[in-house]
Amino acid sequence: MKIIFQFLTLIFLLPVFTACGAEESQTGLQEIPAVSLPPPSIGRETLLRSLDELAEIERAGSWLQGMAVRESGIRENAGDYTGAVAAAYKELSLAYGRGLILKEDIERGLFNLLETKSDDSVVSAANAILAFEREQWADASAGLELLFDRRDEPDSFTSWMILVCALEKTKASSEAEDRRISAAYKSIRARYAQFPEYWYRGARAFSGSIAAEFAENCINSAVQGPFAEDSRKILAVHCGLKPEDGLLIKTKMEIEAIFAESINAENPRLLEPLFPLISLPENPYTVYATGVLRSLTAVQSFREYFTDQSSVSSGRLAERLAYICRG
Image 1: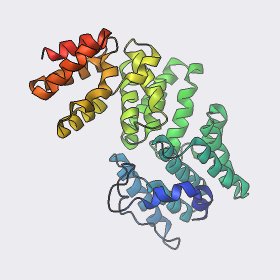
Image 2: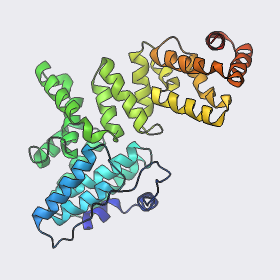
Image 3: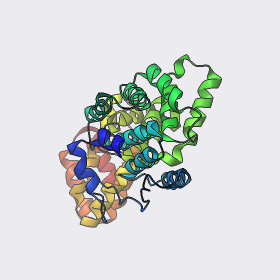
C-alpha cells in the first residue's frame, strides 16, 4: 500500500485510525465494517467485487472512518493508481469535513506524493486534487475529467468532485446545463449522507428550501466542522435574517438534542444555549425552539426557571420567555 503510506503518513492521523475499535470512538465514528483488504495476488475480479461492497455500504449511508483507506489499498492492488490517490484523498477530506484535521494537513499529504516523483498518473491525480483542494475549479475540472470522467460510477467520489467543479462554474453555463448538473448532484445524495462537504457545496450552489435543507444536513453531519458556520449563514439568509445572525441559529436536530439532554438530566439550565436563538427575529428555528421550551412548562422546576430568567432578561428574550411561561 505504497500510495496510502505516502499520502497518509501524517502522525496526527494515526490515533484517529487506530481509534476505530469495537466501540464508537470519541469522534462519534463507528467501527469500520468487516470488508477485508484482498492481497495483491487475488484476481482483479475479486478486487472489483470488494470495491462494490464498499460502495454499497456507502450508499446505505454508512461512510465510516478508515473505509476509504481500504478502498485506496484495493485500488492500488488492482493497478488503479489514480483511483488509489482519490480514495486516500477521500479519507482526508472526510476527516477535514468533520473537523479532525486542517486543510494544510491535506495539502501536506498531496505534496508527499508529488515529492516522491511517483508514476506519472499518480502525479497527475495529485495535481488535479490539489487544484480542487485550493478551489481552482477550472484546473481541477480539466485534470479530474481527463483522469476520471466516464470511468467511475455516476455517484463515485471522483464523479462528485467533477460535479462540484461544475457547480462552482455554473454562472457561465446555460440554464439547461445548470439544471442537468444540479439534478446529477442531487441524485447522488444517498452515498454522501455522512459527508459534510457534499451538503455544503449543494447549499452554496442551490437556493430556497433546497439550499436550506442541504445547509441543515451539513451542520447536522458535523456541528464542529469547518463548513458549519457558513451553512448557518445560509440558513439565516434563507429565513430573511442577516448572515451574522446565522451564528445563533441551531438546527432542529440540535434543538432536540439540547432538549433531550436537559430533560434526561432534569436540569433546565442546560437549555440556555437556546436563549440566543429565541432572541432572534421570528424565523422557523426560533419558532421551533420556542415551542419546544413552552412544552416544558408543565414541569414545575422548568416553569419556575423560565419565570426567573424572564424577570432578569430584557428585550426580545424577556418577551419570548414570558410567552413560554404562559404555557
